[in-house]
Image 1 (cartoon, rainbow, N blue to C red):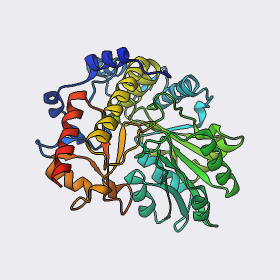
Image 2 (image 1 turned 135 degrees about the vertical axis):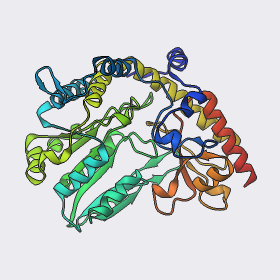
Image 3 (image 1 turned 30 degrees about the vertical axis):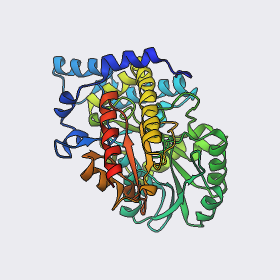
Image 4 (image 1 turned 120 degrees about the horizontal axis):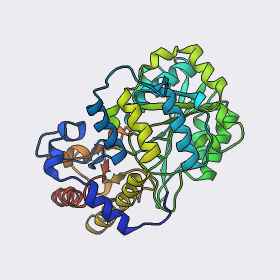
Length: 402
């Protein structure tokens, strides 16, 4: 992972992989099909880029081979190939040695969170969640009959930080799980080692299982780093399940492949004793192949995407701070999301709904990330420079009419 921005790499990526509006309009994806044709989408976590060559090779191979049967790779089950690729990936990117035997494959990470909460807690138990948070996490806690123990991140004027005193006070005798999202969605925080160490101490002191959603681990900007939670303290791995997928970093969510990594074999055994492994389902063969290819051979594309996304991040921050100084936004340290606070504009209603109607721009509504956050919205800036500017100009114009 590069530590410095390179304009040449960003430009090369733009020339090779950004897509024109007419091509994007033809995509049969949630981002481009959910809203009416005149709406510019800047909401769901999809990138408006062509796939990495390594992934494109897999798609081409599947078409040419016409091999759509049960996947079996190198005379072994295909998920074992995925597990070994994950171990190569963690060793290369994070200097983290992971055991392929402790991987379980499944279709997507929300499914994983449901299953892990069912396996490691009981109805009425508490689940600690730092808010604002990815909307499906609220659904998981509600649907499984667990208690939400929310601990809001605090805006310190420079960015969002954990209020450790509040967090500690949320934990009680029936708290069982810390549901951690790092890098954080929607604020874009990449938690520092000292923050992770404090979280680790809390988990140890209260005997919590930690579900560490690290799906945005690859999308960290220069000057920041992603530290896998399981590596932060001795013994922490034994209580940590790490969730990951190539779906966000390589824009392949539709191929349906993800994994859970249990920090040790005993933790994995506790899970499989509670829930049979067959309940996980099975990722598609094409999803497994694309994920392995992305992790093994997609580094150049990903490096280009990071440099290009850094430019788009700075485009958002500069434009908003110049044209709409009333709107508070901090440069995300990771992800391709900007968490925008429109409170001082005193919009006539929720920000997401307002801009959908008056700017014809679809943002992710703030209240879905945190009840009461109607004045906030999340903007997805993983698109072309021109299209992003069109989105920002529409938001600015609608803001001035408010």
